[in-house]
Structure formats: C-alpha cells, structure tokens
Length: 97
Image (cartoon, rainbow, N blue to C red; front, side, top):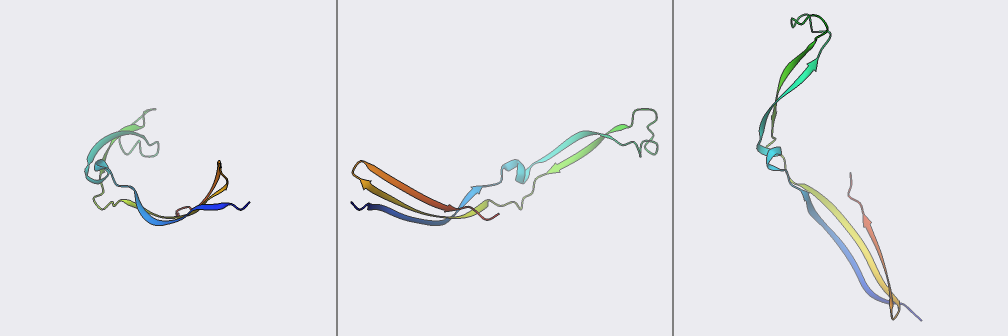
C-alpha cells in the first residue's frame, strides 16, 4: 500500500514583525534618578554619609526607527498512508540573527 501525497508546500517571504510604538518614535520624557557617588561627594558639596543627589535625565524618541522585517522560508509535505490517517512534516528555516 503506497502513501498518497496530499499536499506539498513551499513558502518564502518577508513579513513585518513589529513596528516602533509612538513613544519610541516621538516622545520626550523627563526622569529623576538618585545617584550615589562617593568619589565626587566633596566637590559637589556633600559631607557625611549622604553622598547621593538627584540627576535629571531626558529621554527622547528616535524618529528614524523603522519596522522590523524578517525573511522566512518553510517546506512541508502531507501524506495519507491510510484512509483515516494523515501525516504532516514541516521544516522551517529560522530567521538569521
């Protein structure tokens, strides 16, 4: 009894994985973080055990970000050796890093 080839498929293509979000592209944020700097405490005027100060940080979006694209390919075959049984074998090439 020979198995019938029901389907043979090959796919090659490129698709978008994820586009940049609006905050990643066009936001501006101001953040404050506490910095502890033992070496610079005297020049900054801090004495004693307290050597921390608040640093102001600006975070801005990058308008040059583009959507991520992935090249992918796959090959597959589906066999039906018996009337009530089918087998499927698929092989895919992972995206290049």
